[in-house]
Image (cartoon, rainbow, N blue to C red):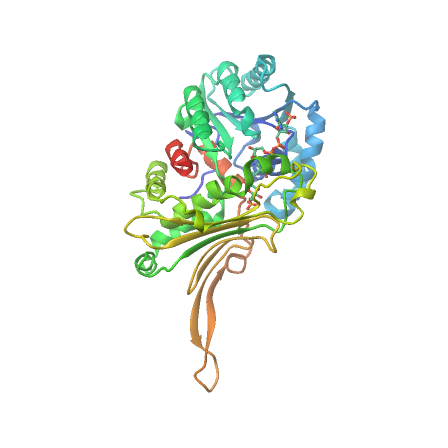
Length: 434
Ligand code: NDP
Ligand code: BG6
């Protein structure tokens, strides 16, 4: 389906949009969220007269401070994507951002925010125009609830939609996740909650469904009859880099396996959905999760990279794992007996995220997206010796000139369009912790 640039302001395609980024002073907001909105703006998905962006955080910043800080990241984004390279675009985009400083737990900040939002809505959409509000919580999960409660009490849009976007981790274990879900569920309807797992916005991850269900040659091979094992491997060549405070509380399993890699597993293992509607896709993922057997202790390996404790943001003597290897088994007709080996580690020898099978079909999610199949073929020459060779689809070579969108960009567009297909549903989340 082609995207229409006009179908943005609201889910129905008209109206004015307020984007409110909580935690605007933070790492995620500056590196990913604002640049993603900027890129969409440059591509015409956010017309200048139809959007206003608000940054909210406790830090005492002025509008200009925030804009100066963001400018650097927008330029990085602009370099990566020729469409966004126009500097006047950056200036115009930055002029749309208003910063409001306030605490997360006190009503005054939200009352002030509400006034500023309404002021812009009245100016731009008039008294009767249709409006939407997108609240992005680029914040530590510890403050999700207080922010949610205050949004609900002071900042809800009464003449259009409201959507609340949350970043993983959505809890530490089943109990804390359920508690978060049920308290948020008391504030917002499930259709208003967008739980982001940015892996679901990656090009090669989205390609999994198309690859699997649009190629008849693959379908009969994709089961225990022909697959010996599936490996989902995540390797990063850098460590915690100042995020040790967060990371140490969660560890590698909660940071990437329970969410990003389990989502990839679901897309690899699920049955064909009845349609591409968000509910059908999420129903199929849920069925996979329900069939995952308990993890066997003998099939878990944990480790910590040398140097982790040197990061000043990591508590002294921590034994939090930065590496884990886990075997998951899916007890259903298609996958019974096939181990799904999941490996994830920080500060390893190279950056890599891919799903691999023996004989060997490789889908490389990053860097440099690729799919290749290894075959045994005859080595060219007079004799009949053999060699391993690949049928190779390397995206950068095959699709020259096409810029692959950032995951956050794609997901942000989905949120604006009200499409929850690539977001985690509450029951899916609960089962993934179970
Ligand atoms: P930060 O630590 O940068 O926090 C964001 C902002 O929240 C800070 O600028 C600060 O703003 C405020 N804040 C920080 N700690 C607290 C606290 N204890 N109580 C109240 N406010 C606090 O986090 P990130 O931006 O890195 O991440 C935000 C969310 O996104 C997290 O849930 C994280 O797990 C998730 N995430 C992050 C990724 C990344 O690449 N950074 C990737 C994927 C997910 P101020 O003090 O100005 O209010
Ligand atoms: C985040 C984790 O969710 O994903 C980080 O918190 C990790 O620890 C990151 O580095 C990996 O994302 P990507 O897109 O760089 O593979």
